[in-house]
Length: 284
Image (cartoon, rainbow, N blue to C red; front, top):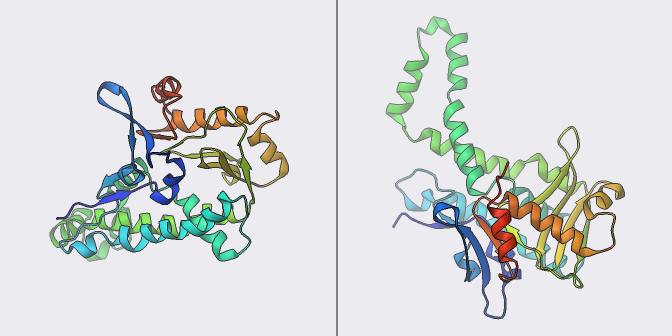
């Protein structure tokens, strides 16, 4: 069987949204844009068949990106997440790196980003060959010759190398360095009225003019939020000027739900009408 379900949100992350029935509420877009809400166990949520697979007849190789790489990031997530959910900011550089890699991976691992990277790579992957042909006219090659050679020898090359590039982005993203260079904080929202949600676009980010991260927010449970920030002013700008947690929750939930492509994760369906409204809005 060459079909394997790959999680783009780890179960260890989603577990925080489980209720007394050990399930969470998954909102998803259905036919004609209808929003459906249903209870699922974390293992059944935020997964896509063969999302990170590479073309290979050998099934062990086919799923190596998932088994050897993405599952490692998700396994490494458990240790720093346990610190943060206890309100403790890890000081060990190795633990901090594990968390920074997971947070950074959320920029790349979602289905629409993986698909977009695949498409862009397939469009541009022969650009190097075009330069080679132009700079080596004495060889008598044309770009069509090079393309035909690849299509004959390895027609799956673009798909394969797109996944290798994806691994490189996740492993060596400059976002990792950005996040490690920020101050970290965990905000407890125990007295707030509404629980935090998550989605397939779970990051709320404020960037500077040169695109570096100024502040970043990520819900790590229905009542806890991880915030990374460069200066106190960046923290205050993200958290808000008021003293009420409800304001932060409203802005965060509104941001990530409105940006969600397909899936919103919630503790329950108490905000169903609002989730439906936000998921139905046009997303940029």
